[in-house]
Image (tube, rainbow, N blue to C red; front, side):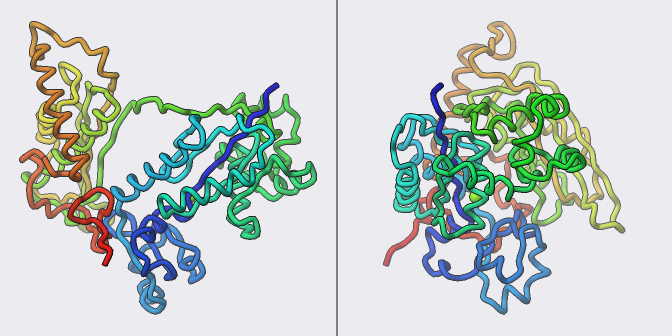
Length: 428
Ligand SMILES: [Mg+2]
């Protein structure tokens, strides 16, 4: 049986590291990144953690600590993070053709074809190269299964003596026992809170307990999913790499407004802006959608203000990824639910009934002719390409509005160094 070897490469404090990659001045200062509208802390580095700050805390409640210790604060800059993530994954792809982009800051690499190599050395090379090419520090855990690499990465966070690279394949059975006994059952990859509670009731408290539990009992109570996790903990790989992600079956674009919306015109702009973004994501995966839902709501935290929320779903006569066509139905949906005299906090658009583009049959005698369909696709491809090269909203539709003063608040946004020519980092 061929032995599998996987590496999990996890970017350390990813959002903070992206900001630091372009700003040497903040490298040794505690740093935090805020959520949309600058509401709460979504990412922070170890220096900020030492000050007692935590993920999820409301920003305004901790102004005193932030000012006293000179904490560097950034609004979330998702265009920068997406682009930096793509760069990191690009470097990883150079180490193995089998790469699973697991999340914005984590990738699994299959390294089974490196027999007899010093895997710790390979891990160090990966770490050094990602740092050199992108400026992002990473942790690398190597193990015979994906589930064990996850455990390795968690250990690296607690044990700095490993220098961010850990090869579990070189562990003795005793060392592995100790490592697994250290991981609480709810922290095992794939075990949700419900199963964790269930397992605890039966005395299965750690990853080691789960590994050593009776196989039939696990299969009976945790189904085949639990059985797979158990096998992975025993060192048998059975959760394969997902090298190409299946296309999304629904696409949602929704955000809270920085300033509440009280006019129909502003709401139409917001809904068109979200529709345009959702349509762009739809085209990125070469798909079309046949159903669109528009939703909106007032601010539930303003208890004394009148409250209203509603949604409306429309089936399109023909599946489409053409932004103006989707605008037409989004606005129709909005008209059905928009009520005057409310102050709206949030709206969004969801696309459903998504199918891959090639199976669409344009109706030669109906509303969509084949030549028209090609014209629409070409136009959108040009718009997408220009926005990709020159930055989002280089080209946009008038229906999306120009001032958009309802947009989310990002008062401490760093420049979009990697996606805007006019915001390139300057070296002086
Ligand atoms: Mg991470």
